Amino acid sequence: MSARDLAVAITIAIALLVLLAMVFAWRRRLRRDSSLTAPLGVPEHAEVVARREVLYVSTTRHEQPLERVALSPLAYRARGEAAVTDRGLALCLDGAPTVFLASSRLVEVDRATVTIDRVVEPGGLVRVAWSVDDDTIVDSYLRVADGDPQNFISELQRLVPAAPTDTGATS
Image (spheres, rainbow, N blue to C red):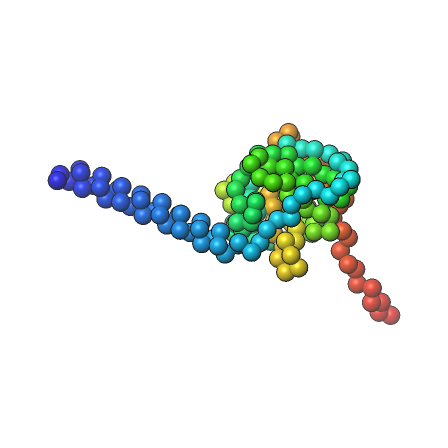
């Protein structure tokens, strides 16, 4: 066996080890997040206010844009449509059931520049913070396909419930 053949064999072995580590890490993440699922199905009589073609990029832990959450069925990047309704946001992504984020689940909507696997121009992503359950808030990132997302963000922000205010008066 020549030195060249040995170098090729070592390179192949290292590449296989890296691929195996990636597969095991993803499977561990899927197991870790298996208890989390996004709400499915649009409520009857929800009136569509606006539709946008989007690229769903990722869902991460709240305010941790580099910590992916493998939330079913939002575990993988996909193209699709985001429909803003009078009751919430419907994500109709290719190859996945429709995810519906009711307005009561929405926490915050704003712009972002960075998330796992994606860096874009400043403010080029739409970050939708929402409650999976009573204890878990996540951030889902969308990239609007047709230009500036500001109108889309404004439509979504109207759905976010107002934060509770402190009613205790001090005199």
